[in-house]
Amino acid sequence: MSDASSSVQALGALGVSLNATAHNIANVSTEGYRSLRTDFADGPGGQGVVVANVSRAQQPGVDVATQMVGLMETSQAYSANVTMVRAADETTGVLLNAIA
Image: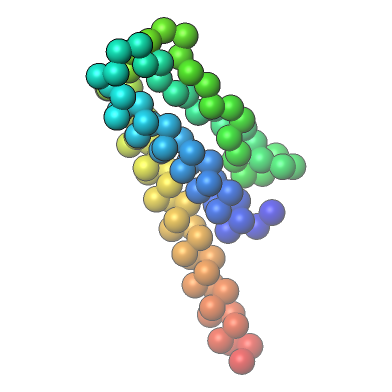
């Protein structure tokens, strides 16, 4: 699997995590709401990352501080993978221009 395809795969998994975090934050005041958690696993052949599971907490409640830290971490990982995809795209463009 190329670096770009691993990054694209990671973007999908990170998007699921961002969605779960947004859902948790939106429901911070919802009585009885049990927050979502996204677990990741290695992708096929041990490369990349995929969503292994999205589960609910055992107890109701949303810890906003934990959600915000998770949001920042996931956002940074998302940004890094977008940068990787862009770099791979630019490299491909340069190579194609050199061939032409």
